[in-house]
Length: 471
Image (cartoon, rainbow, N blue to C red; front, side, top):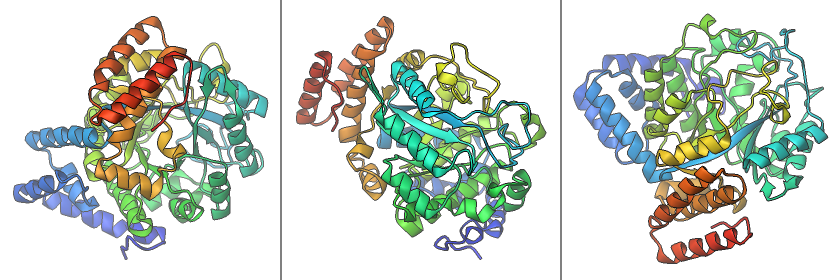
């Protein structure tokens, strides 16, 4: 039985409810009075239910699609402005005991060399990332209780936060590791993590169990209920995501929105982020063996509909996607992107991009400086800001600020301040030129005169060598 307030995976992600939703969406895909009603509701920027959003996903009217895209762009601008938050993944270990059939780290893969970073190697990776200009990392590790126990993850977090190189510092560490216990989530919280991210991969239970035939990840309920345990452990910022291409995208879309509705219903806080990965080629993995792959057009529509359905969430797209797709989806709701990513263990200290331990092919292989300049040339402010997390604006405090639109009063100036740091410490001359012009222009978009004056003061002090200001 479907119950968004239930703590049982099969009840808050009900297979019967999803199939019923898809049937309802098919029945009403051309019901224009209903679609008009749903679109009018979406304009209020309070989100849509999984059933309402599924009707829009099923509709194929080009005029409706045009309206969805325009609304997604407006909602993204209202909640997040023209800022794009920057981050990089850091792979700690590719040891894994699971048998996930779509991931090259699966236990049976004998082709890839297994590697786990020592604390000294972690420090070297962090320095390499700091030397690019990164301030926010997402750490990744395979599931292996012997090689990657929680103590190892905690030690790595401590090392990352301890490294101060030149003007570099990692100010926020997000964590993407396997589902674990309330006690371990509490330890991660105490270690000072930002967001806990866990991709569901697929919400279809039968498919999930077939795709994860062996290892602890085989347990669908334990995995799906992880976010509830994380919140019980005190982590109030959690990130969802499915791996598009494993199952029918309409099924996944409905399940993802149901998960967001469940978190909101039980904890009063929806997902801090929703990631948008698609299955990609990797060692031992051919995406063509999965028959649910989606086109760029469908992918873009999913991005836009998630933005209007969950307007407050941060939406993430990685370097899995090409420059072209990233450029398009940033107009449709994406608010965070990775830059200069390496998806191999120890990849940032290698002169050449290593491919033998990559988790997936990286489509966008530009440097961070190139990505930053490209963003600015397309009218986006690259933001290295971590202020909300460090000021305690997380969970319901972040959500209330975001939903009211008040977050713009601190996020816009924080983006300009952290961009200025990047320009002073890491950028090429051409990026500096483009960046300084953007800062001068965007200062005028800070509505409060006092905030604008303080921002200008901070920018001046950054030019004189000071660092790390925030609102």
